[in-house]
Image (cartoon, rainbow, N blue to C red; front, side, top):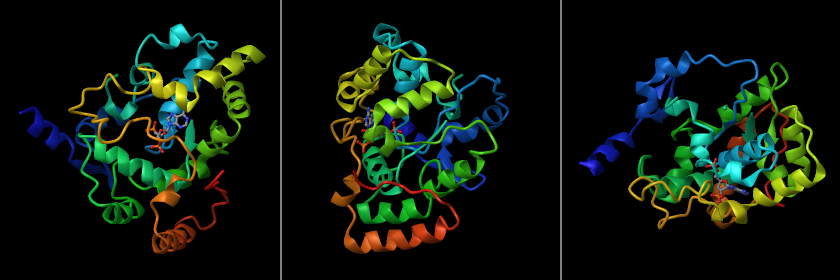
Length: 258
Ligand code: A3P
């Protein structure tokens, strides 16, 4: 019964043409009526762009790098997902690494559809026929809104390159002044290696029937440029062409390797 229940949950439905998990669609009116308070902080990431990473950074900043306080609960409870409606700052990651990360995530996530082969997934991702919709629409949409609203636009690749500088930016955005030692501690504690070991961030408490980490770990690689190990030359050319068309007029320069 559990398996068939999970199978049912793993099918996506649509809201305004965007594929979303069934539970989200069934709760849509409640989610749409959510009213933010002026000092609410929304983390608006495309799947696999580094949601967990920025969540942990924000919590560490809020708790002045108090590691024990940040251990009070698993990350998905400290920062509930609005679309799960059990009670989003945009962060962007380059599309190619997102696609690879998402492919592995869909393989191990039993409540998302099976991604099929890499070739099939490549097409589905480009067409936006994946959960939470099109990477292109997500990034374009937030990029266009960033100057009109109080939005801090962050890049995964920048945090990877210079975590201290980027974490300082997030703290400033949150109105926090951090001591050098606090800042250094946050850098240390939010490294990939630390977060991979940390049961409050690595999803090890989620049952295997939902996240099967023997297929692919939730904290998988945490690098920039893994796409090079997956994209064929032909896929890369096709992708670049589609990217140029879909992102026309958008002046974002994504870093694709470090
Ligand atoms: P990979 O699959 O490429 O390893 P999300 O939290 O949005 O689901 O994103 C998950 C991706 O962010 C995974 O990418 C994961 O390894 C990476 N990630 C999580 N914590 C990280 C950290 N501290 N540093 C770098 N990457 C991290």
